Length: 280
Image (cartoon, rainbow, N blue to C red; front, side, top):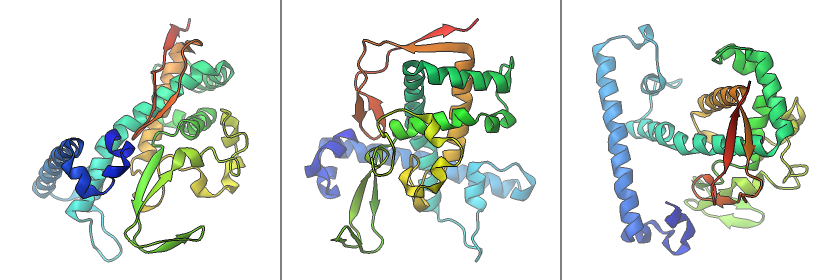
């Protein structure tokens, strides 16, 4: 996939399919689709055999299979598979990216790490776990993670196909056009963000960002194809960072240069060198 992104001559799909990377890419896509379809098929059978879905604790896939709109129409098999693919596979690398850059940001900004630690300690105390009530109380941690996703955008570029023609800045774009949107650059636009290259979780404190255009901060994309698992991902990240900070003091190697490397997800070109010292 990174090969595809960096080779403009392979953007037409029929050309990409003929390349060695394209053949491997679509082979892996078929494998992923078959894996998801097998899970969906087995769950459908399970729902049929075990009766009324309302009497059981529904998980993500159950909700997709039983969802109906106002007219009683459910999702198609392809729509369900697409959402399952997104939830199962898109969430892995993105969460890993956010956690990696969170560790880097905590180690690089000791004052911010201290604020996160103080809040976590105040909320969970000496407990060895984080419960649902704790998550909603950790306001500064939430701001910190938002700033991580702004400053080190986990998915820096997304693509969309136009369902209808539109005009952007005087340029006419026909229906069916593929549009690349540079979210990472939008997250650093000086017309939108004050001191865009500074790492400041405080920019998300209170209602400061509520007056902004909602599309100015889109780490999970936007519209009908935004990431369906974003609430789960954010809670997962909060729990992991809270437990990590509560147990360890984090530092990074000041002599190791960290540079953004834009692929499908945001990575560190030469990795991140971090150390963890257990708190006493």
